[in-house]
Image (tube, rainbow, N blue to C red; front, top):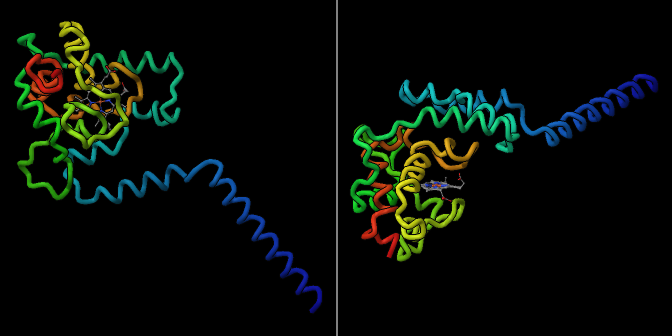
Length: 209
Ligand code: HEC
């Protein structure tokens, strides 16, 4: 009787020790990535087939994930080179569209949701992370302020091209950027990106006033 009680106590102690160790390990290492992946996949059940493919991280995201976005410079160089090769520049060589349209796109956070009607045109949601027009008081600060963006860069054609590259594929400029890759991921089309670039660079745009 006494002996079996001792054994039971020992078993209890042992099991609680194992549990403590396991949860300590979870806390140290974070959740098991396989469990997180399974959960993510399960939430994409209703998504259309072309979205299903997006659950798989591409080479660039895999590298960024592996380093928690803090990539060594050799890996960063590889990412920038790979992403730069994916940027499609306008065949007409013109980077500037209509700034008024660009202003609307920058302010539009719709699109990319399961509940959207099928013909929903996605916006850029730039204000979620950037200050742009000075009169707009509601904006996020994850990214730098883009107020006076064109004026500060003297409307330099090289800067205009760089901004197009940045919006088309943020990681072609900065590896593991937090900014979406709007062109590569087909969130915005070429004309929309041109309109956004005009919003940044047209001297008449309220961004530069
Ligand atoms: C989820 C947040 C997020 C969104 C949305 C976002 N950006 Fe960014 N953006 C960033 C961050 C963070 C940086 C700075 C780090 C970097 O370069 O990636 C940045 C940098 C930039 C830069 C370079 C700024 C410089 O220092 O010269 C430009 C231009 C830019 N964003 C434009 C846009 C435009 C236009 C949109 C909308 C179509 C947009 N961003 C949407 C986060 C975002």
